[in-house]
Image (cartoon, rainbow, N blue to C red; front, side, top):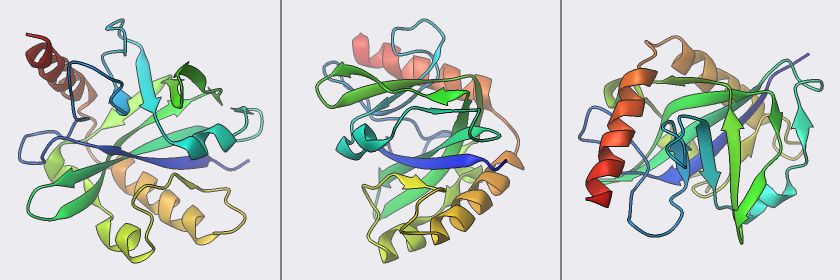
Length: 179
């Protein structure tokens, strides 16, 4: 069986820090990974606000050897970059709608890298006008996505996993926003 790999974009903080994390605000549902848990419960949550996510059916590990969600951070410093910063692995995709058009999925394992180790995929994303698209390795219309996603996954997993540091970084950012 093959892996199902998704690449999910989210708007991120600038990439000058050690890590790239989701943009934070006091109100609203910021999309992206929540390694500290959306409710600060330590669960590996991911919040997604893309309408096309509604189209994804419930997918389980029975159909694939594993399900990987690659996180593609969109950063805006002097130029826009699309950086693969890590991934969640999950046993199933069963998005739960937590607000109109906003979905939550949970991961079981995580792997994140520092900004310096992230993978810049801007050239491919921008050239194909995929800035706000979820890419799927099982796309019938775009079989080339499978190779891209597999390559990105293999490259990111080969780098040192700094998940615990990333989780603390996200928690610290969240605490600064609240106070």
